[in-house]
Length: 300
Image (tube, rainbow, N blue to C red):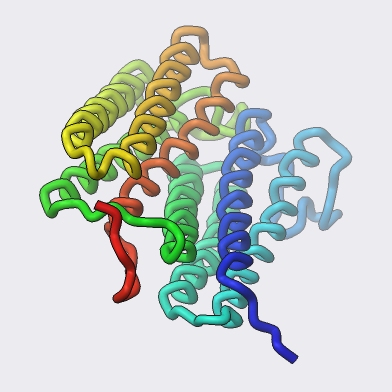
């Protein structure tokens, strides 16, 4: 019996894995924003009496987030199995999908540490940052899975260095954003330990890194506009990336000057995952980190 799957079907599976990882970032954020970080006081059981407990709002929110982890785990395992049953096997796809499985397992263990340490801010930061690593892995896996049908821009060494620098800037922006969150009021529980930094100071550092990242991105877009041959493929992506980044910055400023309301914080969290996805995608479409077939024709 032929159990092979097509490249197109595998692309869809990789996309589903990415979407699930994106969604769990949002649901995990909602756990903190609703003060449900300790809605389940134990792990892997919700409490010492019940494995699953939805008798309270906080418990239900935390429990739903935990259960959705099972969906994510199933999809990333399916991505590994799918890579083994492709019509044309590619070792790089298996390696990348195994990276997702390893990351999800690490995330489960780190989630346990977050709960058992009473929402330690370092553990909380690590939990979110590992999610960003997983999202990056998923984006690269999806791009690698569809590299035959999706062209890659052949950038010069200087352009690749500049694009990599932008990626580093956005990574620093994400990291500094977690410090702001770990300092602010939305730590997952009103009694959770927070960093003792001045919120205004860490917010300024974060916003400065974001603005620097957007400025570097705008310069890159202007540089790319000079190369007509590259415009069709990458200019629109860069413009969308910059537009989303500017909206994200706007939401950040509005939330800060309006007392950090939950709705805007949730929107900012969604935007952070989206901007990071676009940052990684910009890097990958420039050919950095992708393994191209020998007969693959690059778009110039």
